Length: 136
Image (cartoon, rainbow, N blue to C red; front, side):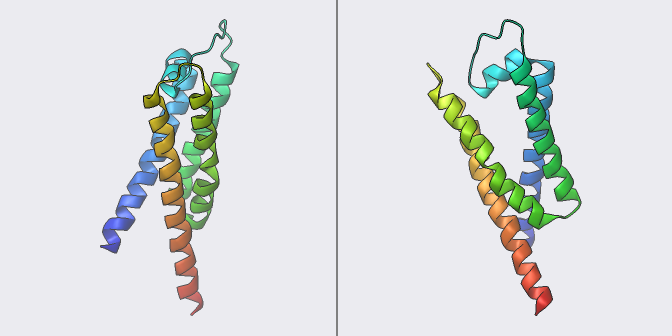
Protein backbone atom coordinates (compact mmCIF):
# COMPACT_ATOMS: atom_id res chain seq x y z
CA UNK A 1 0.00 0.00 0.00
CA UNK A 2 2.83 2.41 0.86
CA UNK A 3 4.41 1.78 -2.54
CA UNK A 4 1.13 2.58 -4.34
CA UNK A 5 0.73 5.79 -2.32
CA UNK A 6 4.32 6.81 -3.00
CA UNK A 7 4.00 6.14 -6.72
CA UNK A 8 0.67 7.99 -6.89
CA UNK A 9 2.13 11.05 -5.12
CA UNK A 10 5.22 10.95 -7.37
CA UNK A 11 3.13 10.88 -10.56
CA UNK A 12 0.69 13.54 -9.32
CA UNK A 13 3.66 15.79 -8.56
CA UNK A 14 5.34 15.10 -11.90
CA UNK A 15 2.13 15.68 -13.85
CA UNK A 16 1.41 18.87 -11.89
CA UNK A 17 4.88 20.17 -12.73
CA UNK A 18 4.51 19.18 -16.38
CA UNK A 19 1.10 20.86 -16.56
CA UNK A 20 2.56 24.06 -15.11
CA UNK A 21 5.33 23.97 -17.72
CA UNK A 22 2.69 23.54 -20.44
CA UNK A 23 0.58 26.41 -19.05
CA UNK A 24 3.66 28.62 -18.83
CA UNK A 25 4.65 27.90 -22.42
CA UNK A 26 1.06 28.50 -23.57
CA UNK A 27 1.12 31.98 -21.99
CA UNK A 28 4.15 32.76 -24.15
CA UNK A 29 2.85 31.15 -27.35
CA UNK A 30 -0.88 31.98 -27.16
CA UNK A 31 -1.37 34.66 -24.48
CA UNK A 32 -5.03 35.47 -25.21
CA UNK A 33 -6.10 31.82 -25.25
CA UNK A 34 -4.15 31.17 -22.05
CA UNK A 35 -5.77 34.18 -20.37
CA UNK A 36 -9.25 32.90 -21.22
CA UNK A 37 -8.38 29.41 -19.93
CA UNK A 38 -7.02 31.05 -16.75
CA UNK A 39 -10.46 32.55 -16.19
CA UNK A 40 -10.24 36.24 -17.02
CA UNK A 41 -10.44 38.48 -20.07
CA UNK A 42 -8.71 41.84 -20.12
CA UNK A 43 -8.16 44.50 -22.72
CA UNK A 44 -4.43 44.42 -23.42
CA UNK A 45 -4.21 46.45 -26.64
CA UNK A 46 -1.54 43.99 -27.78
CA UNK A 47 0.61 44.36 -24.65
CA UNK A 48 1.05 40.87 -23.18
CA UNK A 49 3.59 41.81 -20.51
CA UNK A 50 1.54 40.38 -17.64
CA UNK A 51 0.82 37.25 -19.65
CA UNK A 52 4.55 36.70 -20.05
CA UNK A 53 5.09 37.27 -16.32
CA UNK A 54 2.43 34.64 -15.57
CA UNK A 55 3.97 32.31 -18.15
CA UNK A 56 7.43 32.71 -16.66
CA UNK A 57 6.12 32.11 -13.14
CA UNK A 58 4.40 28.88 -14.14
CA UNK A 59 7.30 27.69 -16.28
CA UNK A 60 9.79 28.18 -13.43
CA UNK A 61 7.51 26.67 -10.77
CA UNK A 62 6.71 23.59 -12.83
CA UNK A 63 10.35 23.08 -13.76
CA UNK A 64 11.40 23.36 -10.12
CA UNK A 65 8.79 20.79 -9.05
CA UNK A 66 10.07 18.34 -11.64
CA UNK A 67 13.76 18.94 -10.91
CA UNK A 68 13.33 18.61 -7.12
CA UNK A 69 11.27 15.46 -7.66
CA UNK A 70 13.87 13.88 -9.97
CA UNK A 71 16.71 14.83 -7.62
CA UNK A 72 14.74 13.25 -4.74
CA UNK A 73 14.87 16.48 -2.74
CA UNK A 74 11.54 15.62 -1.16
CA UNK A 75 11.70 17.92 1.87
CA UNK A 76 12.51 20.96 -0.31
CA UNK A 77 9.81 19.88 -2.76
CA UNK A 78 7.27 19.57 0.05
CA UNK A 79 8.08 23.00 1.44
CA UNK A 80 7.93 24.52 -2.05
CA UNK A 81 4.55 22.89 -2.73
CA UNK A 82 3.12 24.10 0.58
CA UNK A 83 4.34 27.67 0.14
CA UNK A 84 3.55 27.55 -3.57
CA UNK A 85 -0.10 26.86 -2.72
CA UNK A 86 -0.38 30.59 -2.11
CA UNK A 87 -0.04 31.22 -5.86
CA UNK A 88 -3.21 29.38 -6.96
CA UNK A 89 -4.97 30.81 -3.89
CA UNK A 90 -4.30 34.33 -5.16
CA UNK A 91 -5.15 33.23 -8.71
CA UNK A 92 -8.50 31.89 -7.49
CA UNK A 93 -9.21 35.17 -5.72
CA UNK A 94 -8.34 37.14 -8.90
CA UNK A 95 -10.62 34.98 -11.05
CA UNK A 96 -13.48 35.01 -8.53
CA UNK A 97 -13.31 38.79 -8.18
CA UNK A 98 -13.29 39.37 -11.95
CA UNK A 99 -16.62 40.74 -13.20
CA UNK A 100 -18.75 38.04 -14.79
CA UNK A 101 -16.47 35.16 -13.86
CA UNK A 102 -17.62 31.63 -14.61
CA UNK A 103 -17.69 29.25 -11.65
CA UNK A 104 -16.06 26.54 -13.76
CA UNK A 105 -12.94 28.74 -14.07
CA UNK A 106 -12.18 28.53 -10.34
CA UNK A 107 -12.02 24.71 -10.26
CA UNK A 108 -8.52 24.39 -11.76
CA UNK A 109 -7.20 26.87 -9.18
CA UNK A 110 -9.00 25.08 -6.36
CA UNK A 111 -7.57 21.76 -7.59
CA UNK A 112 -4.07 23.27 -7.63
CA UNK A 113 -4.49 24.50 -4.04
CA UNK A 114 -5.62 21.08 -2.84
CA UNK A 115 -2.86 19.26 -4.75
CA UNK A 116 -0.19 21.64 -3.46
CA UNK A 117 -1.31 21.23 0.15
CA UNK A 118 -1.75 17.45 0.00
CA UNK A 119 1.44 16.74 -1.95
CA UNK A 120 3.44 19.25 0.08
CA UNK A 121 2.23 17.79 3.37
CA UNK A 122 3.01 14.27 2.11
CA UNK A 123 6.60 15.10 1.11
CA UNK A 124 7.37 17.11 4.25
CA UNK A 125 5.90 14.37 6.43
CA UNK A 126 7.73 11.59 4.56
CA UNK A 127 11.07 13.38 4.70
CA UNK A 128 10.60 14.16 8.41
CA UNK A 129 9.80 10.50 9.05
CA UNK A 130 12.92 9.38 7.15
CA UNK A 131 15.10 11.87 9.07
CA UNK A 132 13.77 10.50 12.38
CA UNK A 133 14.48 6.92 11.29
CA UNK A 134 18.04 7.73 10.26
CA UNK A 135 18.72 9.42 13.60
CA UNK A 136 17.36 6.47 15.63
